[in-house]
Amino acid sequence: MSRISGLYRLSASDRLKIVAENSGLSGDEVEAMKTGGITLDQADKMVENVLGLFAVPLGVATNFVIDGREVLIPMATEEPSVIAAASNGARMAIAGGGFVTSTTQPVMRALIQVTGVEDPYGARQAILARAEEIAGRANERDPMLVSHGGGVVGLEAEVVASKRGPMVVVHLLVDCRDAMGANAVNTMAEALAPFIEEITGGRVYLRIISNLADLRIARARAVFLAEEIGGPEVVDAIVMASALAEVDPYRAATHNKGIMNGVTAVTMATGNDTRAIEAGAHSYAARGGAYRSLSVYEKNRDGDLVGSIELPAAVGTVGGATRVHPGARANLKVMGIICADDLGRVLASVGLAQNFAALRALATEGIQRGHMSLHARNVAVQAGAIGDEIESVASKMAAERRINVDRAKELLRDGR
Image (cartoon, rainbow, N blue to C red; front, side, top):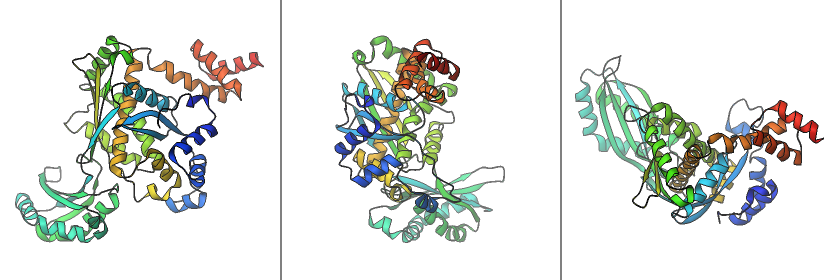
């Protein structure tokens, strides 16, 4: 159940108890969510030169209905208002049927750079002529992936111009199944390098995954009823804002940042690679030669708002930190995630909800009101507020629109 009334009014421990009961979490899984999930010893095995642990708040977004299924969504973020905005956006989508999603196959690209070839177009033809043999050699490097229905599904080769002369760039297309795929794809590319050199007579330099995962796409669509979001004027204002983001990179950058507020928070909560997701999303937004918005908003014949989003979703549910980190595993369980495809659908839905909530705020009260109300709590704590003082000081600062540490200290002195 994703619609939990009054969750924000409860204590953190009570919220966790409710989420645990809804998700069937074990005691160990609850503890992993509560404490961050890993010990110092575990961290020392994950990265180099470990000094300690750096915690990020973990919250849960409510109200999501994705393809008819209610989903509670853990989100790891340090930014106030992100989780509240996602929950609010999801709530307003319910009347229109929630989020409807689709995905492509989980195909990633391995890039192999061939240089120093006298006849680059002839080398390209030679590579394509032996595509089946190249695929067979690559699949030999990961029989486990092949046994699960993955492996090489295609091969591309192009001649590209560069300041160092023409190069042949080979793309090995690999179905990664439920893995993000970097390890599998990189292993295949490295193993193929000598064979590609033999075929072309050139020298291979780069042999690595591309994070522009343009063949691994997640899409989400939602109808926001005009009467639910503030009326026809709000619909028109959001459509107008969307139109600017579709053509102006300065607006598109902030528009897409709002999307990634949600996408990155879920990616982090599940132990996936936030940098890969962000690089993929922003490069996908610029694939036509100019940076554009990842989402589009239109008005349908009934006068309601229709939002849609499309973004790369190179995430996994097996391998890497996703399986090593107990907190990440617990968060996947909360969402009922079975496979990487499920997670991609969640990312697209959260990104759209987050984006819609921000655009609606811009179209109505302005972005600062809700954001600064939450920021005021942090300022109150910085000023030394404790317990009930935090909400009292924060609410007064928000009402005054004077949110700073000096004002918080003044209110504390007056209150005490």
